[in-house]
Amino acid sequence: MRIVLSHQSSVPIYEQIKEQIKAAVLSGQVPEGELLPSIRQLARDLKVSVITTTRAYNDLELEGFVQTVPGKGCYVKKVDNDLMRSQYLKETKAALNTAVRQGKLAGLTMSDLHKLLDEQEDV
Amino acid sequence: MIGKMIALDWRSIKVYQIRGLFLPVAIFIFGYFLPLLVIPMSVFMFMSFSINPFAVEEKGDLNHLYLTLPVSRKEIVTGRYLFSLIAVLCGIALGTLMMPLANMVSVSKWFIGIEGYIVIIAFSYLIYAFFSLFIFPILFRFGYNKGKFWGFYLPVFLFAFFFSSYITFSAAPEYSAFTLNLLMKASENLFLVSGSMIAIATILLILSYIISLKAYSNRDF
Amino acid sequence: MNNAIKVTNLTKRYKNFLLDNASFTVPEGYICGFIGKNGAGKTTIMKLMLGMALKDAGEIELLGKPSDDVSIKEDLGVLFDQPYFQEDWTPIDIEKALRPFYKKWDSSAYHRYLERFSLDPRQKYKSLSRGMKMKLGLAVTLCHDAKLLLLDEPTSGLDPVMRDEILDILREYLLEENKTIFFSTHITSDLEKTADYIVYIDNGRIIYSGLKDELVEKYCLIRGGMEDLPETKRRKIIGLREHVGGFEGMIEVAETGGFPPGVITETVSLEDIMVHLNRKGA
Image 1 (cartoon, each protein chain N blue to C red):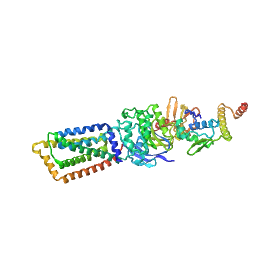
Image 2: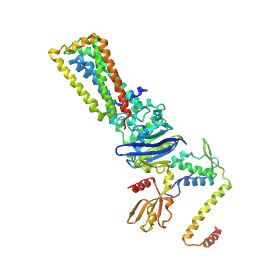
Image 3: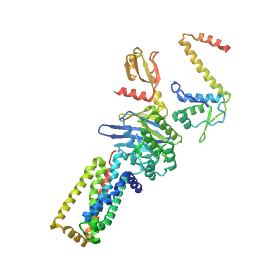
Image 4: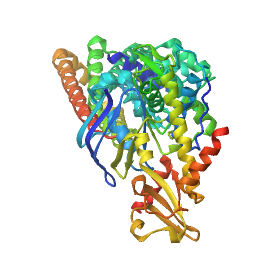
């Protein structure tokens, strides 16, 4: 599993951890049923606070990617299509958000943006 | 248990333990001149030796260690008293053994019998108790650096003063028999004299202990 | 969640200093940074917790028991800015002296730490370097299964390499669930990433007590040109500093609306918070 943090980034650490674990799960790099490192072990390895890793794991559980078993740890859940779809949807929305903001800064109107979007169809 | 505290005090004076070995030598040399006062002197020297934990504690700021251990302030005080008492008992034992030896080689000789010994031992115990009334509470309240003048050097000075006065006094020809007569009188009323000295000494020690407990428990570090 | 430390209305008067009604809690199982500049009252509170100084008012609870209960100290590991041992003691002497006091003293763990830290068991304490002394102090606190570590400026005076080593040893200590570290320091960079909770003290008063993330996420740094500073916003800026290039300061994130574009905001560090809050008071 690959978790590489940037402390300079404006993205909060817990979110970076969460997204990278998610990516690993979705890509199949971390198989279903695999036990993730404990909250404390991960905190130690990444040199971050325990609260940070706890937050990341809690969010992952809420979003349906992992399952916490008391006394054992966090297990990776089976990635179902709905889950993948909702993740991709979220990423697409974020990308569109950025694109729209950029466009507005450049002075484009919403119809200009729609035109650009249609051009993308060939991608 | 108090034993751990006494052991701790003993270990804390690790470097000074060696000095303890010189005590018998010093006492013996003293006894060469005045065998009669071997026991009081021995008690006094051993008592001074038992003040070392205070000096060591102050030098190393060891209260930072002692007060982080699972031990109460009361146990610290009790440990020091017992440490001192043990040292004094050693002093009495050593002095009692040394006195006949010193007597043999000495320039002045005294023959006092068991009763005489008992009187002198009781007297030494009383001196110890009297000093401890001042030394310990002051050292516990102010620490070694601040308390050493009033709590140690001054009592020692007074002791030396009265002591040398006594020596000068009894060296004078008219009073040469003074000490001997005193001892004889005391030996005749052995239980009364020794008994009351021991009782008073014990009361003084208990008083000293109570004052020290109060002084130390109110101390801010 | 249990509290490893609970301080309520703690007051202590010295000639030139007043610890004024301090209250805070430290939850069990985490590392709590206790920050404040020199003389703010950190060591005073540590001493009061240990019973080295006597409080004038208030309550202190450690591991659920009143702090004057001597038996708590079995589960307590304490380290000051340097360990306090008799200077002629060797690590072996230290074990002999301290072991009788702790029911859970683990001798093999102690020697394992000595080996791991490359400490010669027969070397006198006074001849150790500062970093070695701290490691020895840590070895002693860690080998009797302490549940709460109270550390008073344990990394001050140490080089960055040593500091990193010590912090890693502390993180290792926290791998077990019910261990807590209370870490007082003025070197906030040690805590920036690792601390879970923060207690911030200034001039004898507790300014903040809670999650580190909440504290850091509440503020941000703000910089801009002189013309970028609206008058209405001026007093919202904490520790405002105006210079030839513009202005610089700290502001609550909630207040960052209403600035012109071109103004730069940045995440704030614990150090920034301390510096800017103190500028404000000056």
